[in-house]
Image (tube, rainbow, N blue to C red; front, side, top):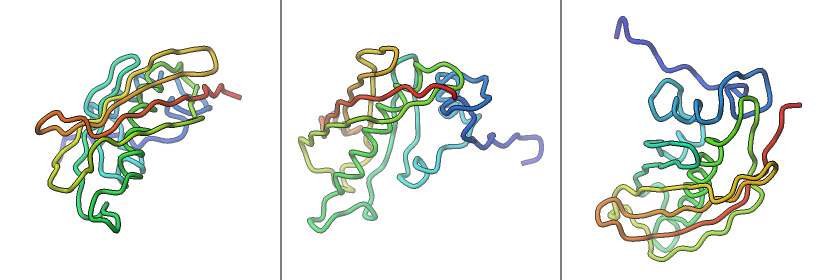
Amino acid sequence: MSGQSRPKSMTLTDGVAAGDSTLTGLQVIQGLVGGQLDASTMATTMAFRLVEASVGHAVIRAIPNEGYLNLHGTVHGGWAATLLDSALGCAVVTTLDAGQGAATVELSTRFMRPILPSTGPVRVTGRVLNRGRRLVVAEGTISSEADGKLLGQATGTWMVLERE
């Protein structure tokens, strides 16, 4: 491994929270996609990876497993809801200036099909519908990577947090 640089650990001042950051939200999200920044603790906990990002758009890839099962033998809806919140939130972050942050105000999810470990990898896409000065509205989907079937959908609102 000699000569290879390790990704920079992300801190709360790396562009998506109030602080002395000089990185825009898009730079932070693209740094996560490209591996220049380490994944957040939530991405590690939920075993997902950002795979694509542009202004107002983000895509996450995740693989459901037995560790996420509920009492009914399906993947818990909270796992899918967290992935949707994360993809939509990352899409929102791509629209932020350096030093700005965002917080989820509300999230509405709908599930169309059960997710099972046998579903295989899922693709979670978020996109910004409206970027206001203080509020951002986004929508997204979670789909099976294997067959493209829609598994769930979400809409949400985020508040832009300004540097203090």
